[in-house]
Image: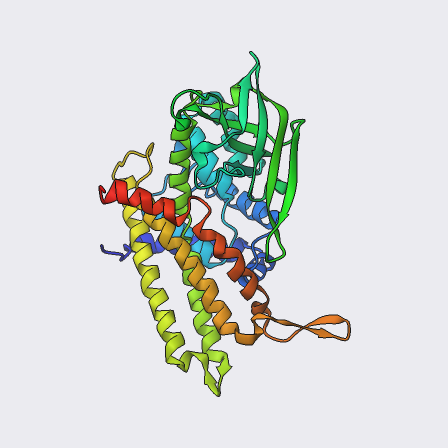
Length: 397
């Protein structure tokens, strides 16, 4: 595969870079450079700037507010936005529920929800996993029963990322117990302000509050909030997960992290010489570079298939390869940061009753990010599930 970009594409890259340099708030850039995820306010502010420019929904068709970019332009934009670093447009809206509504929703749903998703007027979260229904998602038990006017929803979702911020949740619900368990699932849009919706926080081992449990107690959801056909939600979920997995590797972010790691290793003195001069660390660094290039080429291959007219209603099984390798790459980045931090990966000491930072500021997030991103090989479909898909859909086993 030829990964060289044309002069026109390089000119587009410079346009994107110039826009980011001129408009991304310094506070956001510096905060994220330290390894912090963007705050809700930073994400909203940046997505609305992108939306004003017409760039908040890179892969949407122009008919529904997309910029009409080629696959290569989409890739370049994502690479530059992540490298800055700048907040990604909210994935739950732009990359997940938005494409589902575009592909399977009716015109009324598209007109109602899509402009608000693009401008981040509504913050969305994903209601898929349940206690006992994670990798075996089709066994979900959250039930929706139709009373002639509304769907009445009862049940629980868990590991719901950023539900504490959400205005809406797109949820898989069981609407039938007949036939195969995949055949009785529907895709429902639920207002988080509805009576009977309760969010309980889950604190992660890095001390953060990123995930939640969401409970539904006789929640009334208008019939018009059902996307597509009743009992066809499993088809829509597979389409959504294909989009999620394609965006999971965040190649641009890893490229920026590798660049920063090299600078850190060249300055950091370990056993009398720069860490960069220790062959084992440099070997690990080069291995990561090679793996990242292979991942980049795989992402480009799938995107090229989309541009060539591949059926987008069904996920490309190669997205399962991307999901596995992308998760491994994220974890490898966090491991290298911990190795570079050394003993300062535990960056605080007690200083007469208060905490004192003993190393560079970037070390504060090294260990927390390492522990937090153990999750990347589980969410969006575990590695074991992805390998099953690869064995059947790609290897024909």
